[in-house]
Image (cartoon, rainbow, N blue to C red; front, top):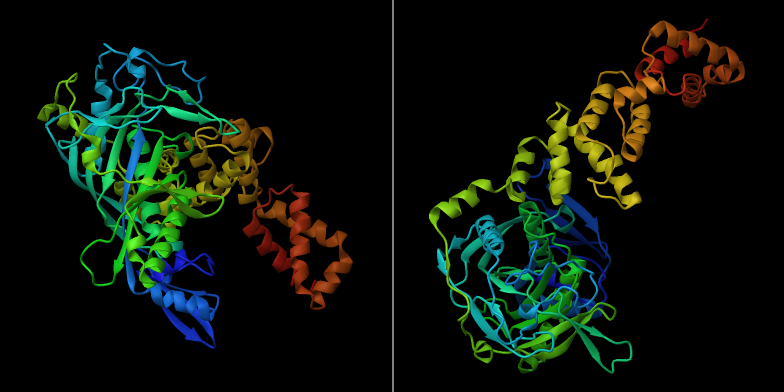
Length: 547
């Protein structure tokens, strides 16, 4: 744990991992990382050469080793419902300010909320997916606080009887972070409404209020304080994003505010059972920001502890400043009593039946953790598994491809290689490209069966992704069928050798690297259609022939 904490140093000399141990050779530090049991033997240990520590860094490192961080996350997920939580107004991100509001959104006197039943369905789906116990009878509460973008002066939320409690989520840490499997507890999932948004002017003289977002349904997921590093926290949040996308309850886009994380951090000396003073960090709009903010805050709190100034760590809300790469005080944290919760008088209780819950349970899709374990059983490495399951649409494309009978490893390589590179360069998702799983399966079969070469296969692939079409149609249209007739290839080899007598003499004189030159000339003659294996076999025989 202490090793990972060192990542919080401002110098960022190097990155350490939770499953690492260190050795020193010739003044240089080495990090040996033990891999997860599910990985292959060649991945179980990796040695990374690291930068030597300065005396100042060594001192800070020794201080960090004596402390442990305790981290929990509150995640707000904006639901993809057609209308808001308690009225019929739609919500469209980026719409003109205050164009999707009504008396309920605006908190006008006499306006009464009516619960959107889709919100309950989403909450039950997520509660089941997080292995929670569902409350068959729950209720809404009023959370009282003042803020300019909260027109009612209170938020409709759930306090003491949330819809789901006591769950957990499974996370596979990435290989570059040390790998391994973690299980993090989930305290509760509850339903609530979002507030509006303040639009601040450039000169800071005043702010404008946009109530389009007011009343948009949210699910808040509160974790147990089970995380100990920034990496673990970031991966927990990323897994939640995957989960809500797999379930279809939210798009999970952090840049749109559809998934927002508030991180609670405290530190304590190793061996101490009591938690330290908790600090909350807001304004985290990416998973990398989550990790960096946690690392900074751990370093800040440990520094105060080590200097005998632990009393200066107060329960407060801090903001993460991306530009300065540090946390700053926003406000002192309110206690529960400050919110003056009481049951929402304008809404009835939420009553679920066993039949309703069972119907939703039976409709759940294959979730990320289940899919990862299935892919491992297919013989894929953990790197392949994590890549394919990260995006629900990529996973669906892969499943559809191998359903055509395509070779599993070849399908994986094409998707992770050329397909992923094309999507990255063109800024497209896999649902935007013209290639279909069926045609990728046909392409793999055509290469494996010897109809076309791998090189021609790449050319066809890029055309399929950009313009669509069929593998069979493109092969016929462009006359791309691989030349696999030995006699035909032999004729072309003889011609190329006859056309290049000087190079042939040099080859037979010992410059064997010229084999590549001849192979290139033959491929040029055949427009890349010669079977590479057959070509090289015949070419070598001819080159080494004395006649």
